[in-house]
Amino acid sequence: MDSSEAQALRKEDNTASTSNTSAQGEDGPKPKKAKTEKKVKKVKKKGRVFRAAKLGYTVHQGEDMLFVISSSSSQFNGLPWSPPKKKIKKKKRTKGKVKTVQIKKKKKVRAKPKPADNPVPSFQEKEETNLFVPQKTADHRWGESLPEEVLINIFQMVVGQDGAVPFLCRVGSVCRLWNAAASSPALWRKVTIGHCWVAPGKNQEPKTEKKIKDTLNWLAQNRFSQLRDFSLYHWKKNVNYAVKVVSEFCPHLRSLTLSNCTGLTACAFHSLALHSRALQSINLQYSEFQVEGPLKYLEDHGSQIKQIWFTHGVKNDRLLATLSKGCCPDLELLEINTKLDSTYCELPVCIQALQMACPKLKTFRMLNVRPLQKTMRNVAKSTSGFPLLEELCIATTSYSYLTDKDLWDILFGSTRLRVLDLRGSSRVTPAGLEALPCLELECLFLGHYFSSSSALSAPKGLHMLTQKWSQTLQQLDIANQLFSEDDLEMAMSHLAQATEADTLRSLNLSGTRITPPALRPVIGQMTALNYLNLSSCRYLPRGVKRIYRGQEDIRQLLDKLV
Figure: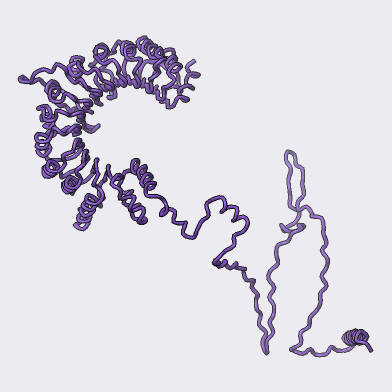
């Protein structure tokens, strides 16, 4: 008998035995099942039946709307998709006891690929890497491969915008190459150091003070060999030490700024006199200092000083008297200022003595300080005035007593004047301005910015000024001036006729009586105009009285002035 026939007979015997047992189960009692046996039923899988999805709602029409009503209580009835079934608990048989064990599906966690010694990149990676220079394993440190000259040029751009401190101190700790580039003396020619922060109501601790001194000393010895410009702002302590260290180790120092500092004594100026032979500029604005220190320094070494800034004060005004004695013959810039909230700051000035003592003066500013003309008996009158003067600023937020005669005494010899700022000088007339010898004035500021204008009289003759300087004028400010409508129209027509020059950049007509016919030719002809102030102009229509910035914004104004 073949093996195939034997297998066929075995299958027939099995089918017969199963039929007998089933028959016995129907007629007679069922035999007991063994505990260890497990009955396995084979369940035939039913084929999937695809049924059309039933609508789970019905639509009813009302009087003025449609009602959509759900037709089943369950949200899943009639849908081809049903929510997933709960996990089935399988019974695990053991000897004696039956335990139910819940089988949990473990989440598949993808193992991170281990970096191979020689990884083979995919085709996409090959395309990306081939676009650039082939990289090596150490190419991620790109900063260490740049030439030092390139780093110095990059640092120079940042230093010019943000200053040397603390930028160079921070980049110097990146690596050796950056440290070498940051220590280049060419980057440390201009240094500005702000205030050292101290908690409110507390004094500076000795450890902090020692650390500040050590840092200044190290910087002066290792970085400031080519320092030209040094500035301190809001320092309340250690100002004398900083000035002393900088003056000793910085032989090329030309400019020193000490703004809003306190505790400055004569010792600091004595150190400057001994070591800073190249110093040309001193800025002491809003600082508290012993006036004897700068007075002694100016008397002994004033011949090398070209620029001085200081704030108006009872003792500080002695500096102006010292300058009028001729201790600074090469002085080119003199600025005396005070805070904007200060009122009635008057300063007696002998213009004739100052003209004789500082014939090379180019910039003379008195900001929010009203000069009072003072005459001296033994002072000879200057015949040339200020022949090199280019900027005169006597601006104040209150009334100024400057008259046409006072202005002429200052500017009778200033033919090179470019900037004239007389804001607040209500007694100066257009006729007095038209008589000045300067022929190429570029900036003229005549606006009034005090609270009340009731005491002002209506001036006349603005058209004479615009006619004289129409070819060179770049900025004009006549805010709150009470010129008449006809005078303003004539003045604007002179500006509009200077089409060949086209130099006007800024025009402030705030609070004036400017009218649309007078304003239209200026806007149409002056193509370089990029700032126009028309706020509080009552003779203009609504929606126009505001500040305009940019040429496009100003040209759109023409459509509204029709």
